[in-house]
Each structure stands twice: as structure tokens, then as C-alpha cells.
Length: 172
Image (cartoon, rainbow, N blue to C red; front, side, top):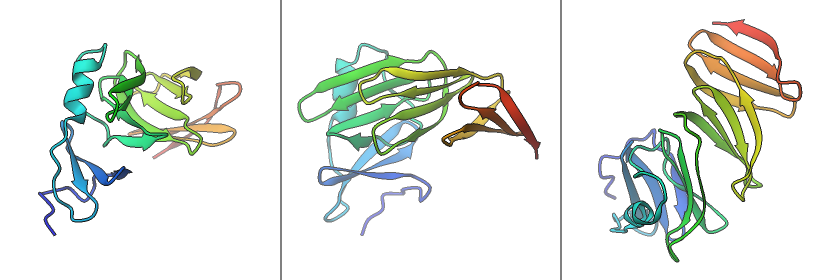
């Protein structure tokens, strides 16, 4: 089966009869699941024509599907939830800060780590939680029911999710 030079580090997500991959930060590809053949689709082209934001060019991950919509997360802080079949944009947000990491819950909540904030956005595009952090060069994060852990090159900063106060720091 052809692999088209895919990085094995790339996430893969199912959408209809395709798998989405991020070939590199600027190139999204879709492979047909039945035979791994590269599909010519215009999902990104259509999104860039219809979006109210600047072009989506550099992604943090391949687009993933929830409730029939693809979630496009652009490194510079653009988010678009787009149905390429009917060309409908459900919602879009520009968080005005580069996105470092994200996570997505089974119930449709999108958590984002930016250079200076953490956002939690529901499946309707409403920001439900916003937390300003002052971590230099954050890399990734983890949210539990009570804590937010932000990983950086210096260590792990642990915050209480309710009070938004730092409760611990673990130096590497």
C-alpha cells in the first residue's frame, strides 16, 4: 500500500470514507480507507474561500470530525468548524494568540493552550472557560477534573482549575 511519504508521527482521523493526515504543517491529505489512495478533495480550498478569517495555512494537527463537521485548528490561532459536504461553517474563532496544543473531549469540548491562555470552547463555539497563564514557552497541557498542568521546558506548573491559582511547580 502506498504511504506517500507520510510521517508516522502524524495523527490520523476518520471522516466519512477517508482518513485525514497532516503531511506537514501546511499540507492536509485525505486517503480513502479502503485502499489508501490519495483523494483529490477541496476541503481546505473551500474553507479558505468561505472563511471570514485569513487563510488557513499552518495546522497544529489534521482536521478531525465531530457531529459531521471537521475541526480545523490553525497554529496562528484560527479555529473553524466546517462541514465540507454542504459548505457550512458552524462557527469560527480567532483567539489572537498562537496555539501550542489542544485536546478534545468526547462531548465536544475543545481545550486550547495558547502562548498566554487556556481556553475551553463548547461544541457551539462558546468560550466556557478562559485562564490567563504566565508560563514562558508552554509546550503542552493536561486538564483533570481539579487541576490544569502546563508543561514547559522548565518544568510542570500545576494550577487549581476552580481558583486558577498555582498550587505547585515541578522542575525538570
